[in-house]
Image 1: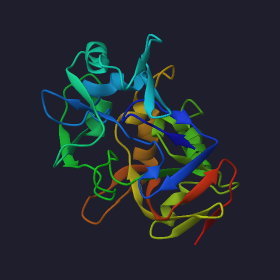
Image 2: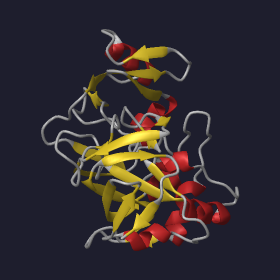
Image 3: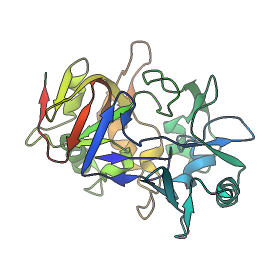
Length: 269
């Protein structure tokens, strides 16, 4: 289980969590607003924001503790936080706890990032932020992202590295599917999941992958195969009319909230 208190920063692993209609408690509660464009900063536009993945955020009480790439501790409630983050990222930003009205998300075309590199200026698509999430949240689409061990194993087998890290795909929950093989969660779309004794989810769509899995994540170096493998072997149409996209994992919404713990049983309805 993982949560990411600041959008596009590295997050923290959890042993237990409360999950509500707004997702894992404490997940994506903050984001950076680019003062120049008025848009939410996201590593999906890596030319501008891939350096966010060098920062780590963790929830501590009523604030978020941020660790800068050089190890400096930062506090979300500090009066100087905007200036410190702006200096580190090289762009003027403001740390915010609710998105502006009509917030949109810019997403670099992943194939162009693969072709030209993460620092190149490439075409972007722009979409509404959090179309399947509660208002006032910073989720790209829905409040939960799920990924299976079967998908990770398939990507690892097909990658020249022979390995892939779950952290590259930024899941909330990694679900152990035992001996299942392939991109098994593709078949969960439209179905329900019961996790532990209380939590009930509805799986909405396969998760289209952007350039983020290819980027360096803290100490993890970049890995273009983390996107190339799904692009070659798991192209799915997430929603009618969207066309085929490289996918890994699924988005889900919460039908019934509940507390969960690492190791809880997951049942497919």
